[in-house]
Length: 311
Image 1 (tube, helix red, strand yellow):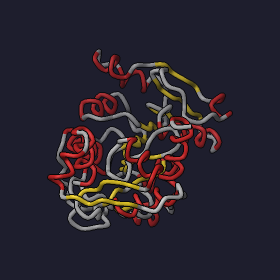
Image 2 (cartoon, one colour; image 1 turned 30 degrees about the horizontal axis):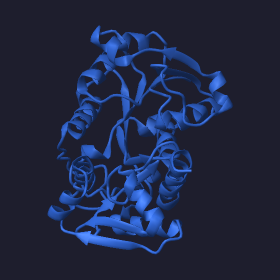
Image 3 (cartoon, helix red, strand yellow; image 1 turned 120 degrees about the vertical axis):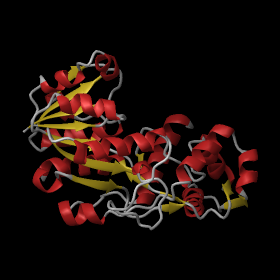
Image 4 (cartoon, helix red, strand yellow; image 1 turned 135 degrees about the vertical axis):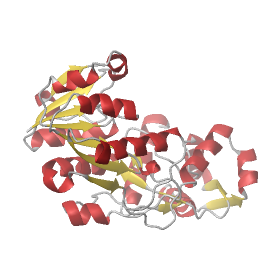
């Protein structure tokens, strides 16, 4: 089977593309050519690389034609963020299987947890609203391709800093936990953060390709089997670095005065959705189980970040 992977040198593609090659797929990667994969792998020598700036070519209405011209049997679209992008791609295809990378943000705030794929969706914010619009289009508003949607949580892995114990990307949070175990958290630290290792996101995309008949017309959550509370996450990180946790809890209105405004906004964007999602559907429909637990996922990411940035 010939598979075109759009955006295949990023977080997910770093793991997906070599795995597809080893599984015998004829693999083509479309990339701007400005990024190398996060991990070296000899399998990249067997990948057909196509240099293409998606946004630029989309402006001319030609991106779908570029993909179709590569003669794919299936397309994995890792970089589709708007309905217009999805339409342009699908309008150029005819009968292929498209695996689209969605987002758990398409759900909006969770009412019941763990949240399953059939839960009502009420997203907010441009990103989540757009991801839901793409899913609805692929699943019910078009009939040119078969489609599957994978909804990742907070993608993590060596090569970049994961969403941290305060629900944001402030490296100072990790520095403080390493130094003396201290961490400032909003409220009582009971909000959840649901990570997933990029390799498991890649694995679920591939499971959709491997079992196309079962995956077609379906969406799947892609997260670790468990989620961290902010408090539990901070305690694990502190003890990982040999520190006793020294956590300070403050009301939200105080928290926002003591952290950078950008970091506070990131925190509320993440914890405000009450992220905790079920992986049961992927297990029952595709037999897929995440291989990385949440502790190893975040600690592996943090350790790699420390080596690259603090040693």
